[in-house]
Image (cartoon, rainbow, N blue to C red; front, top):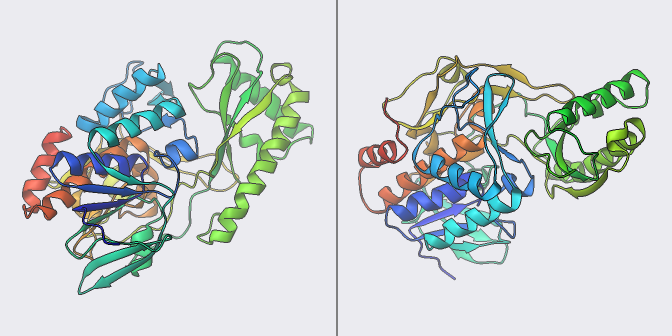
Length: 414
């Protein structure tokens, strides 16, 4: 069975959904594949719960937008559907909490509005290449999709297309630690800002008394999620993350046991948690990084920290470098307040396959740069940009025309 979509996208997370919208708005036929039964990627399956990277860092209470165009449009609509507003954190950062179901619904609405053909519960098992082009891909159901005239975009988060095609990588010395999100109901009524305080008190008591290991004491409240006696929590995982699929699968079970252990402790340790019960655990572990494919340009930590701008910049990054190591709190490297950097089009364009693009967590970047650019506010932009780049290539339009269009659409003015 052959597929004749002009642009074929793998991964329906924030980047893949944005890529589909960007390509469709450019006038081409789009098909989108995802291994889950619903859109959103880690935003929904790992229940991330917050959109970071939308705003400049600032000590001001009211946030200032760092993004424009589709990213801001999506965030505004998500805030309305979620009945949410930005939250300030670390006295310099702002992010947008969201409702998981609202994220799914908004993504589904956008894909339907833009007439994107979506194949859920579909995985890519093989990729054929020839003479510097991706020829096609084969799915787990045996379908062969695409031709050498198709433009492919990898938004899988794991660089599935590049990996299966045997492309080159940006080498990383280590992967970031993963996390698992879960929801507790039955919490005592309290002001929202009192919950992190109560949790911190209970965790410190557990560690000092020998009832709780230090790695479980890294548990935190997903800021902005507390409503009506229920809240989401995030547990950083102490295991070192590899690219071994069996090890990653095993982390699903081990992290669930860790969650049950810490919740059982909280019920006995602090009155605010006495009636707490686990109502939901994210279906997936939140892996922050994967393989980074080699692009025509590679975003570096120096680019991020020096707030470098680029004449071919197609996305604006404003989140600090946030690097998580197993068993530790995040290590932060900050941009100056009100500053941002550009992600060049070349970081979304394969250096080896002429019709392959990528966006989201698997853009071409070193490990520290990826620790900034991986957040959703940035993924919405890189996805949209990759969609336009691929669509313009399909239509026979120039790269310069595509970049000009992206910069106008995303309101990148400098």
